[in-house]
Length: 478
Image (tube, rainbow, N blue to C red; front, side):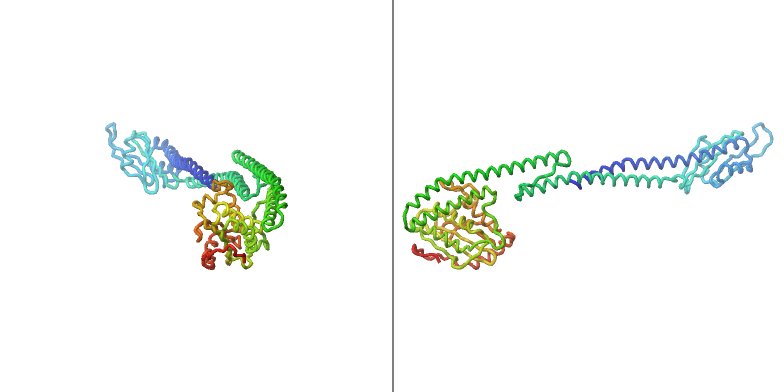
């Protein structure tokens, strides 16, 4: 906008300067020409009284010398014939005083017309002024006007006009630039405020200054930011309230689990209830503190992905035994450090394995593979179910499958976990014939997407062949 205003001001001012300076320059040149010929007319008029009295050459030369430069003035007196009264008299030839520059034809034409005229000669122009003599003849006074006198002062005047025009253009550009800055700075602050708000800085506000339209835009932005903060606060309170409502049924479950007695199933049930209570407490605290549920782990933080995989598969294996599902774990026999909080990885695995149990029939096999690369870790959860026909719809937050108990938030939890490290989530077909969800966890969260794509081939080459052995219910975790 700033440069646009400068360009418009430059174009308009230049057109105005040209529209006024060019005609004014032509007028100045014409005035200089008129001034030069007016001086020539005054010099010719100074000789006219002497010509009306005498035609003596000596006297006329003195008059010409006193009236002006004899090199610039000439007097042409015609000759006389026989006396008009019939007396004896000889013809007298014409007299020319001074240097003649005009042609005889031009002089004769002026004498015949009886009025002044100008004609172009070498180096300038001449003024031919007719003067009546006492004898009735017409003499012609010639005044030479050099070209330098015609253009005297024109160059200086044009230079002054050019300087004034340039000053006007520079001044208008400077004023337009200042106006542009006054308009652009509030707009830049508005853009910066929008970026800050988009980055999660909810305290970003814009000064309400500048032109009236930008002040109104800044006021609207600040009002919108306040409403966003209020809406987020209301959503956090609502999430906390809804989560708090789960405490009552959880208390009933905990009391019922305590009365189950001893045994592996009872212990797993009580452990699940305790974990559910911890998750609810975490949700409430997170909502109250306005902290994201999934965040990138700081330096030195994270967990052992292999340990978490073994732990969660130990939990889900009991349910798999009850439903007659064959299962397999690979790659969890050695430590694998990842920059992800333990609770977040456990929640993501529970979401994926829960989807397997919820959306596939009993007896459907599933597997969890853990692959450790140089700069990334891949977690694969696959099953032998019907698969996912529309992966994009499945990844869309909150859409779900349309069945009871499906909210569509499980895969979104997994996606946010991967993206917090700079990775991603992909859905495809597994070698078991069903769906495969691949979690790409980047070990260096600053890596660019192109770099991650460039290393995917290396990680895949390090993977062992995807040959699924025959499943056995009694197969234990590594």
